[in-house]
Image (tube, rainbow, N blue to C red; front, side):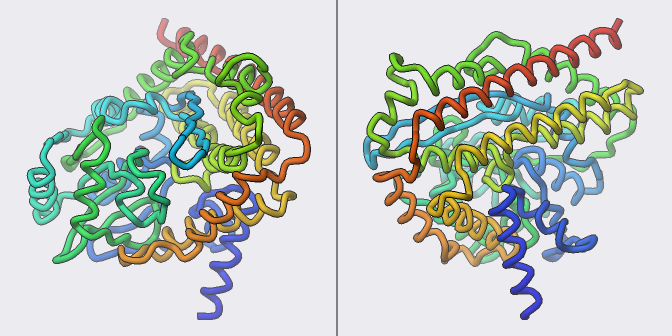
Length: 428
């Protein structure tokens, strides 16, 4: 027990210090950790919710396709920035999109599975009772389902009521018992969610209410992987070459300018003129960019892994681009460190508490009744610092972040231009 407790402490400390995911931090501290299982279901972890859910269902149904290839097949990377201002609790929250079509769960899921040659059924039952009955039938028949519950209503993240209806991410519901639905959310242990809570969480967000994807068993042959990699690369190059400043690379340039603009009502010097809500926004930036967050971070390293795998499948010189995206992943990490520095005591404590919540969920799961104990302290500290941010020179911070984002935008634009040229040459 002492050894296990010490390992938990070390994993949490590493996650808080580096921003790594639980899986990555554990891998650094445990030699070749053995996969854990719950009955017939084996936990494989993962980074990005959507690609990990697909990869884990496929692995448990006999088709071992790694998460990097699944992610690449879906078009790889995306870009998106939204700063939300909430009057009900005077808070600010940052939403960052790092996956291709990050705003369209169903479209991304469908094209990813189609490219991999995986047959599936997508159910969008509008009524809660019908959706619950459908999920129960699939699970009782031994068919795991990819569902998308609201994070507040699903309960196990321990979020405040102010986050009700803000959305969530895909998870795998793999079986149920008399009281609970058992969930795999990229961890190593089952997360138990009471049936009523799962039903409410799935029904909350209108744009994907009660969506359920059921994957058929599949044998993915090498030729299909070649095709999926080629289409995914082309999609990535085209998508991030778009001029959209909402859903493509210009979003980073737009954000960079809003950090120092003094006239736009949505610019950071205007929104945070009195400092209120700034600490929460910077926390959401850190959680969005780093793998320790619920959405898997900036995903540039995951894309690099996919590029390396595609290089062997397609016989293309993608190694240099993989290295460049790993460097860009580092630039995002540096941005997050600058925004939410561990040298600021209040920020350091929020990082520790965030890491503790993630580690607790992913290593131990939950009985579905008690969220992680660190959640209330994290919420209280965020509320306290939202009223009085511990940042000495806000203007200098915004200028630094703006310059870093501009550099990231240039680097990603150049890398995508090189990818597009390479894909075009290989097709001709």
